[in-house]
Length: 341
Image (cartoon, rainbow, N blue to C red; front, side, top):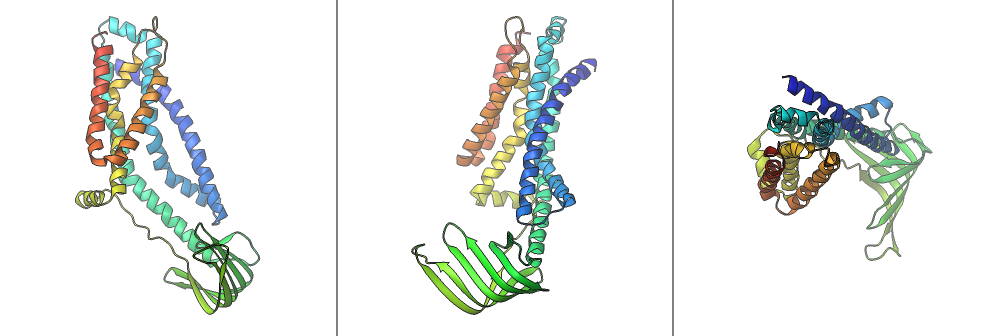
């Protein structure tokens, strides 16, 4: 019990600084990404905080595995450089006992990743998308006069005057890789039918790039033209019905790849647990402390392998790669640690 507490304190002293740095960096990136949405929709500070809260499970899912792995290696390596683990080995406390402390922790981390990826993240992603859809619809209903940068669906909108839902002197512009479109209308009405928002334009002209070339323009005059604010259907999906879930994965290559990558990410703490001892234990008289650097290199190798192989063999990689890493880490552990200390 004393040994377990001693090892976990050393682990915590390495884990939390790594976790804190990664959490701060990724949180800042997420906040910048969320703040950039204000160019499309108006978001208050409370709403920005809510969107950030929805992104927290994804942030935790990204940083917990690497923080655990590098933190555990660093914690063990720190005790090794202070000769404390070597003294413990000399009095009969083998590295296997230290390993037994991290194995249950690795399973707890993997189970937490499973809960995050299959239950919590799908729910928060759904709520986030639903919130943004509502804000987009709200922005479409609240188009203001003489204000640049407003959008109605994919269209940039500018109006001269507005009286309730009646717009005057309206201009719409859309530009994409295929062609550009520009529409002018004398008046328009915003219509909201059961959440489906449309813009009914009256008495205007449309200017469109021709299909064959962008150097010529088609001109269209109209008495009435309806533009829909198309919103994608938001569906909440999570791990409820395994049979249905598995059938969807077998039918879709993209879903199979995503599922395969998720399996690799969930199993990472378990299959890498032997590396914690293999890299953390060394004789500081004859070797310098490169444990964290080597641990990060192994993490990158694991990441590169599963992301590339999963794209080609999503189902086979879920079995072969975890077994490969588990066997490799065990062989290295046996050859470098088990029979030496």
